[in-house]
Image 1 (cartoon, rainbow, N blue to C red):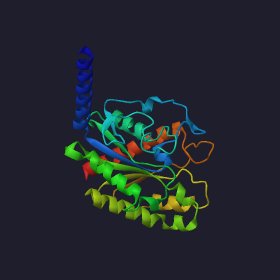
Image 2: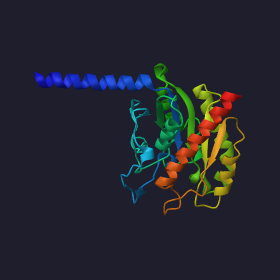
Image 3: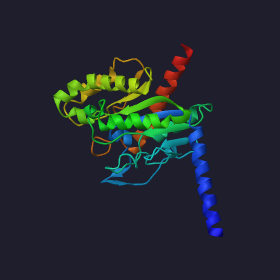
Image 4: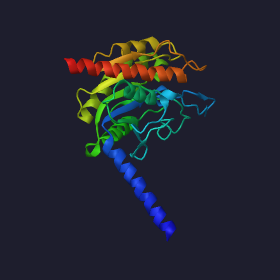
Length: 264
């Protein structure tokens, strides 16, 4: 009898905590792209070293939408239950959220929505594809019952489009179409998109893709440049320290953009 009562109390407590998490989410950020967004910082030979720097520490003020569309406290690796075909490590999401909270005490709860998956081309994010549909589904689930508002999408993708010239040349148009369709399907025509200009690609056509990212020619698309950030020995994936720095750069871009918008 005592065990049954204890179990019931535990279930009630977990239900209460989930309800509180759901009701507190105010600032929602979508995280999309490929492996440098899902994060391979600290991953060597498919093993994550398990080291979480202070800038990536969990906080009751940072939640994530998990694979079951439930709000839970965010911990590294942030994409572990989303990008399940690779070993995830440190990405820019947690340092971004922690940096935001350190910059302003009035922000409130930050809700992260991981959607990135390794190894994809921009064509795999076009309207109607699996990745696109999953992104829209998770974004809409994140805002159910007015739990919060989507403040921005953080986007880091493009390495896979540097291999072939035709992919690199088509990148800008596909990127613009993806952003436009996403805004339309979410009913957010002015959704802020903070994207990353590639740190690497390792292929001949990296600069063509970077050129498209640095000149998106769409309103409310802000680009932070990851070039010269330190890479792993694979010359493709950002190290832990680079992911932390990138998260801070994206937080700075968000704060600057919101400050400019508020004063205009």
